[in-house]
Image (cartoon, rainbow, N blue to C red; front, side, top):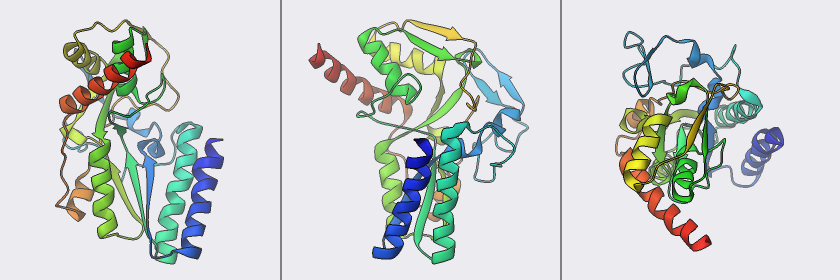
Length: 253
């Protein structure tokens, strides 16, 4: 199902665009999962609330850029299907000159995010806090780090690309050092904002191909589109998700 939708479905859309509207902008929402678990090989330092990349590593200051390797790593079958689509999008841009761009997202979220147990952890954590649902953290002591970008900031990035597309472009897009947290840090922030305790347990089993530490380096995109900037930080993002979730689940009772 993943491959049929992500890979074959993207190919069908690319071909339809090439055939019927080749001048259109084609922005593909890829994922950092195209890199697989290669980042997990790097030296990490454990703190009380998170893992951090060793400061000696050149990626530590700004996060991972687009040069992270995509081979010799475990992607998950979802990641493999997105990588196939990602390369197709690049190829149609370079080979046919179409206005394609691949945006390799970190955690994309916002007030309408319908998070689930294994996807959209920030929105799902808020849901658990608001509804009193127990939460399970899968692996890495809950100290795994993710960057989070608000849907508004993502859409504004896509809009900037649409106005001045660069065929075959590839960008990491996420919260960067501007907006990131570990699962434990997210729990603490959500508890502070909601005033409710989250009932969570730690599982030793991590998800296959999951990242221990991921922060996106967005400087390549910022260099090409210097007018783009973040409108949301982590706290503003979580406050908005909490407000929306509280309203949604209170009405559902």
